[in-house]
Length: 498
Image (tube, rainbow, N blue to C red; front, side, top):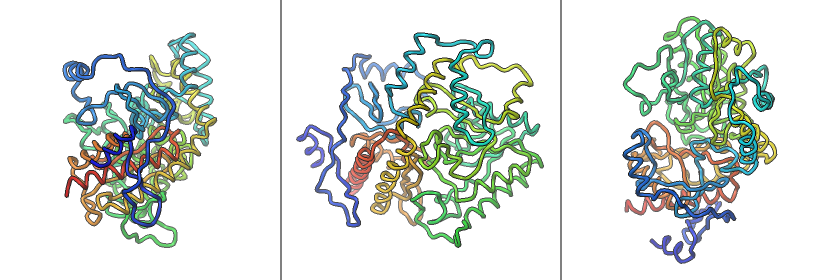
């Protein structure tokens, strides 16, 4: 194409530039990939085709790869990834939202290297090491209310498993409520909390778990252009008036109906992501979570916030996603960005709830190990020192504005949503029906995004959502480039349909 010839002639990746103006954009000007000074060493590993062969023969087939020709990652530096050929890509998915402060962040790397020279692992139940206490105190200091007791794990699924147990032990009840479209892990127990058919196996699921209607202002039966806590609203009329959200009231009625008909008088708890991650960055109507928490607590249940993807300032306006809903949970689970790619998970709760695990012996071989605590502590410092929460707010606004312009321009972009750098773009056949664009069509656009220099994630029940959760060090220039690349990908897709 003409664009490819332009890129080849310049020796640099060029994509169509989307000017931020009210007028229809011009296709005549180009935007280069932002400059970056790091050059990775040459790749000297196993040849690409041999890696594909080994993966096919020796790796469990459940581990599917993106792209028709899978991406072989060689190096990472902050918001950039490099393939085995040395090509550079803007990472907008951060290892499924695990990379918070940037790939191979120097301060985090130094903390890990220093600890490696001292001590790798030790039984944290039988012995003490200073890093565990230092990190737990630092993490607890960032929590509101009486959320002051920390338990470290190795993953988000493990943290959610343990939170389920603690809720049941503390309340002496069994039933737990979650949302349809939720994702809380894929371990045997957390798979019961997760409510996406694409993640469900034909085995016994949801013992003691019931799912309520997902309060989604875009795909649900209620909601419109005044319902979300976002600068981007669904493009459908809304009946909300006088600052109150009618959709929220209607979804609360459905939530209460589930409690009345599908639960005993006392329940163990309620799990919710502040913004749904795997489900497609779904945001709930204003005021819904406050009322849901009230209803759960009326029935003796605990409220559990799954901050695995939303925590540590990613949403911009607050450090924790639940703070956007003006609620304080009883238990908070976290992982992914807590370790910037290092395997760490955590549960933070009140001392009273935490004490339930003293009813029997409990240990965790690797949870709270010195390496993980050193990494986690350095990450907390970097978030503060580099003002990454504020950066998420500022850059996220620029990014969201650009995505909204794509929505306004293209009929197949049905919705744009999110806060900070927890964003999403959903494809539809047309805006009137909101019918999801077929997965095969979405995949064509997805393939083009990599050709245009960006790496996004996919999500939602229908695979029709581009998930945008980059490292929190993303710059405004990066965000604008990403919008240009997305626009070019959509244009190229449309061109093939003519």
